[in-house]
Amino acid sequence: MSEPSGSAKDTSVSNAAVTRKSGWHNLWDWIKAILVAVVIAYLIHHFLFAQFQVSGLSMYPTLHNNERLLVDKIPYYFGPPKPGDIIVFRSPFGDDWVKRVIGTPGETIRVYDGQLYVNGNIIQEPFINGPMNPYKNFGPVTVPPGDLFVMGDNRNISEDSRVIGPIPISSVIGRVDFVFWPLDHFKFIGPTQEHYLPQAP
Image (cartoon, rainbow, N blue to C red; front, side, top):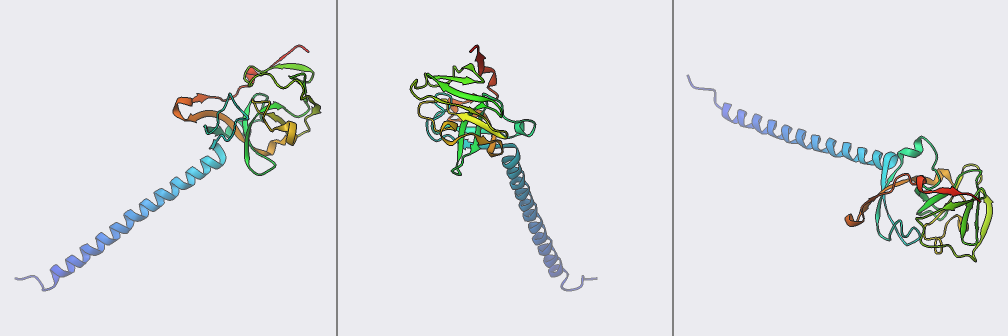
């Protein structure tokens, strides 16, 4: 007994529909995967880590022009920045700056005869780019509540809290953890307050 006519055509149409459905299903899987990846990347950038490029020489020799930095936002969910931390923050001019934390709320900052004083103590700073200009004294200034006093390591050319005043802690984006580019400049920065040591007045 012969098969009813048209069965081969019906099977062909059915297979084509299944193929189209499978194609759309695969496309939707790809779209969902891309959307999830975008959301994860956004959350990581917004809440955990970000990258920035150094522009200028105000942090030389610690950081060099055009180096790329990995900035860690996690530490400051658990506590404020500490003296010695290198941070990225939003400046009063709306762009992002990188500087070193020098003073925290309640501390008194003074620059005298080329030397940094915090609360009357001389601060040892082996990381700065040579002695500060002994003729450019500053302060004393007491850091207000909720603010930080920041300075660049290249003290004689850096525009920092000596110019713009203390910055709000709320403007801090995160702590610089790594220089990751160029590869031959790769180095760990992280918490550096262990190098920020007071000496006797």
